[in-house]
Length: 362
Image (cartoon, rainbow, N blue to C red; front, side, top):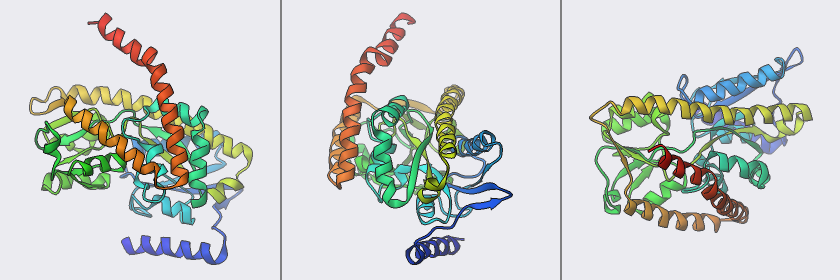
């Protein structure tokens, strides 16, 4: 299977280089049949079900004119090969988290999950009305991808640990599963950080190959079985405050869609962003309630010392990321400027209200 995936990617890349053209989507009886590859295990909740729901919505909204066949991780390509598959024309679209692909353009890490960055509603505002989408398009266009935000987890948890962590020194030598810029923060604290596909996390944790792992939050973490492999569950997840899954579409294919088809797909993705966030919140409530009944499990807040260290190193990592190339610098400047403004407003609105609600209902 691994060789087959490699041959598919290499063959498609060679075809693009020699012919300058990508394969057209399948067309049957006037209908478009598109292939979506994902980074998610088949049948898993959250990401996978959101990808399926998005495909179903697009089919319904188009009266069956656009049909999307959704493939799980490793079915056609590996979990971390989805971007390349779409870029090369092996697949028509992907559903994944772009912090898996920051090695291609560092700006993707910023857009997907900036440590101590924007929460879901803030990110949505920046993308739609703060210039974020135009910058994202600029980042992905040279790679032949059109990106859309299509799912959001909300604020994630800090992860599962086999032992307590109380100081920066506790992270030295710690073997931890985490993607994106948060991983670089932990590396600078002395941790050994790996990016493991979802389907392999529980085996790595149980075998002792890793000492700790984040995934998402109570709903998806318990579905994966992380609560059976570790006792200490930390919050909040500084590394992924509002992670979005991307619907990445082959750009040549996207440019060939009609205006109405593009609008339909954009609206479906935007609706699924909102719907998925609502589901993550609702399901996390249920899963957290069950976790609290387990006396073995300790749900702990990272202490102030760790939070300050995460924050100090996050600033350094973001600055170093911005310095990597011109387009990433543009993204970081725009992102951080919007973050400053939304934090100012948030202190009077969301944060201000929640603080007073806590006092009022105490």
